[in-house]
Length: 315
Image (cartoon, rainbow, N blue to C red):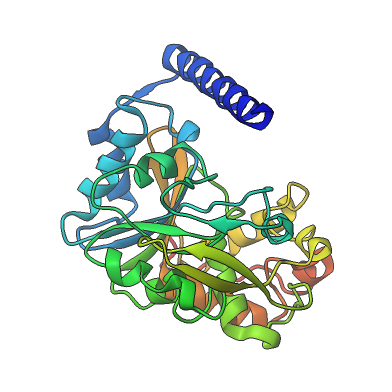
């Protein structure tokens, strides 16, 4: 009973915090419309038929009339009825993969477990026509033409981001693009697809020893035990999404711009970017062969200067 009361109090506090934040934004920020968002996406070369893997910061877009559902509608407008949207809808009790592995008796249930990834993924998950992959920590949700094929059987993949996962299937889609809405080059889980594909050949030992099995239920209530490997926490301290690695985020920003792979533009109030998925993956592999990864040290970055700008690079 006490635990239920604590959860209810925490939920009420979070609802109050969000409402207060929304009031501040509504009064102080530029108002952004669904049509305005779609126009911004078009300037990033988002086109009908695209398959987008989206990482986002809703608050960076400004005050969106209609909130998160309007952002999702604008994304759907941009890719059209033959396009596909994917969003991370991870559920990470304890805040990290390692913490989830340490929870006794934890079993993921998509019928009652939402997502810890913020308001836009929450709204997406609650929308119509959404398919959600079954995975105890890194569930992905999709809408559109390829939604079923991208999300099916994630729980049977040998690793989170490896063969048979939504990430590897996404890379092979025509017109597949990684979209960053109001985020830096830091919080992008697409990077991990290369780690799982290369396995022990990846130049940095990123995982703790041993594979764990975490339980999850599928949409019919059947139980599956899913293999996961937690990241080494010491190595994660060097990763591109760590607050202290602004140097690495800046390097990747300049590197993908110079290579002509990253299209930059404004969506609402947010500085945003888009990179074709296959080209993104291939360039990450090339960088890894030159000892530059999302864990690279300052010395490694200095030893491999950013490429000269491509004549096809776009601002």
